[in-house]
Image (tube, rainbow over all chains, first blue to last red; front, side, top):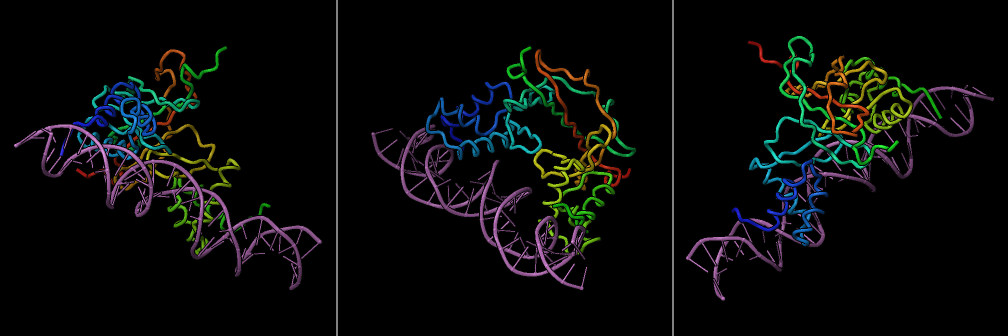
Length: 125
Length: 125
DNA sequence: TTGCTATTGATATATTATTATCATTCAAAA
DNA sequence: TTTTGAATGATAATAATATATCAATAGCAA
């Protein structure tokens, strides 16, 4: 129950080569360059398996479908360009002692998402 | 085309009295205390109108339906309790010069969401 | 009060993302 | 090579929200 298929290789290559989280449609489109018959069903199935195996992680943004990126990246948060909708990794972290919560609340983790314009979409002056 | 209905008043009262963002189901349940016939369709319609009029704002969390809170609250971010699923306002902000983005990226706004246990759900020692 | 019509309640429908189904294909063991 | 069943592709089914429909109700102006 574990075969090395061209589809699976293509999908993992696309994600590991992207450098930013990709949507299922981006993965489908880029994967077709390697396997033109690639189907969206295979994309979803393979993503589910790769997540279960710990190779990739879903990136969740409010009101949007999951994107995917390699697991085991350094601490980072995400930047979404409001114009082109691409999401970028920001390799940085905020210090937990900069976060203030009410008495007796306990923080497990946080999600920080920045919104704005990426360098390709910011208006040139 | 603008009537003051008991339903609309009840919904706005529920939101303004909550002190934290509420889901549509929470609004429906709490609103029924004032108008027992209240329907989910009216909740959605009224929320849409209240957003359009600028009275309330949607609070978006990854992978979840919108919650709603009063507009024009001070700067704050959100804390979601992983146990009871309630979302709380944290009246604080992070300084934009603590955020680092690539050259030529421009930040418009950010979303910070903390996850953990609220005071009601944190295990007592 | 009455009458008009915006709003409501109940429910059907739309939307969007993801999963299930199943005949066909193909990876890989023999 | 041949064989076998896991994986694929195409598409139907599901799930979870949110919107549209429409007869009945109820604000509110006269």
